[in-house]
Amino acid sequence: MSGFVAALRVEALKARRSVVPLVTALAFSIAPLVGGLFMYILADPERARRMGLIGQKAQIAGGASDWPAYFGFLAQAATVGGFILFAFVVAWVFGREFSDGTVRYLLALPTSRATIIAAKLVVVSVWCGALTALITVLGFAAGAALSLPGWSAEAIWPGLAHIWAGAGLTLLIVMPVALLAGVGRGYLAPLGFAMLALILAQVVGATGRGAYFPWSIPALYAQVAGSAGGGVTALSFAIVAVTGAAGAAGTFAWWLYADFSR
Amino acid sequence: MSAAAVQTRGLTRRYRDVLAVDGLDLTVERGEIYGFLGLNGAGKTTTIRMLLGMIHPTSGSAAVLGATVRRGGRGPWDSVGYLVESPAPYPGLTVAENLWAAARLRGVNDAAVERAVERLGLAPYASRKARALSQGNRQRLGLATALFHEPELLILDEPANGLDPAGVVEVRELLQSLAAEHGVTVLMSSHILAEVDRLATRIGIIHEGRLIEEVSAAELEARRALRLVVEARDPDAARRSLQNAGYDPQPTNTGLELREPRAVERPDDVAATMVASGQAPTRLAVEQEDLEAHFLRLTAPSAELPSPVLRKAS
Image (cartoon, each protein chain N blue to C red):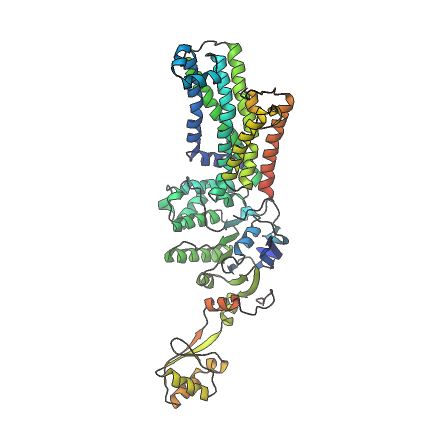
């Protein structure tokens, strides 16, 4: 256990000393701010029409200007935007060891590789949790500043649960990115995979089978699946859980058994 | 404690059609400084990575400090320090933070880290980000990371890389004192012959994945060929006079050289012959082939290499 705590402290230090957490925080902050802007526009339809394009986009994304609509937008941000950012976080935490050549220092230590991978996964989870907390807090602040209507416990708790469950599902589907960072020995392969998964999610979502494609499910859950839609079922959640477990298990196995020739 | 520090049996690694390491039988006894010598691409780093469990052998086995190195196994790593290829500290962390992180993962206290910082002269750079270090200081940081936990075995891949001449001497003295005073076993690879020559107690020469010679430093000294170097005012006339006396002088850039034992063992006879023929030598010296020449002779592509297994040191 002490080895795990030590590995966790080391991974936390590596993350803290990098600009990547700040960059991801800034990137994710855009979501509640843009959402707030949409709410602001939608609060006055006349103003929305005068604003042309932005008004039309806001109409598509939100529709109404109240707390449930705003939380719906944030849940979409946590799944679609979250997928890109979480994938970036995972690709960085795992891939940087190869890109920087530092992986050689992690391989023949009294602290096992599995312990180090576990610590990395915890750091990734905390990091993604912090990003979700950030958009939640900023969302509350922006919503309060706009005096959005519809504030009630019945609206707030499901809305919050939606954002956090969406973020949790997204964290699970980015687990294979960690494996790809090892197999591809750097950032490029995992980020390429994330882009491909995002495109495939759109395609599969459009065919109406998104509820069974792991990388479509969180976004569908947050109801941004597009016209074809498709209900997310218990099986969908199971598929996401299996994807996450397979990605994590694959990452552990790869680090234990792969050749590190660089 | 009787097990060798490093022992490999038929250690082999193949990458598709390339045989990077070919049936390596290597033994490094405890307390030795073993120089693992080879050209770039000879298989040194692949061997070292196999010893550290980073690469899996295609066949054969390796044991480090008596423990067999296994896939993903824990191994004896708390007693091993290593530097593989060029050091790669975390660029965004300072020197102190890099060492702090390494110390946490090794379960070592900060006092040990401070000793290593002092020992390698890194104190002035402790708060400098690793990305801003010179290559020499990166190498020092890599060495500090390898030895701060006072390991029994140090596996160092090209430890003098990037160091200036003063740094090379410092590191050599450091390794010598670790071996002499603390009984640390050192396995160091190098393609810099002079470095190995001055430090190692035993030397293994690897070429195209095979160990082609393994000797003690003293034996290597004896094995290096001797030659008699002769210079005269008229080299052609001197050569003819020596040939007339039954020697086999070969012209060189500066004069002549004789390799036959008769000349090397009795240079005074050569001098007398030359003086008698009116070609008194202006210089006469018995020289030992340097390690570089010995090494190049062993690894020359045209050389008829003996079987992969070598003439073992006694």
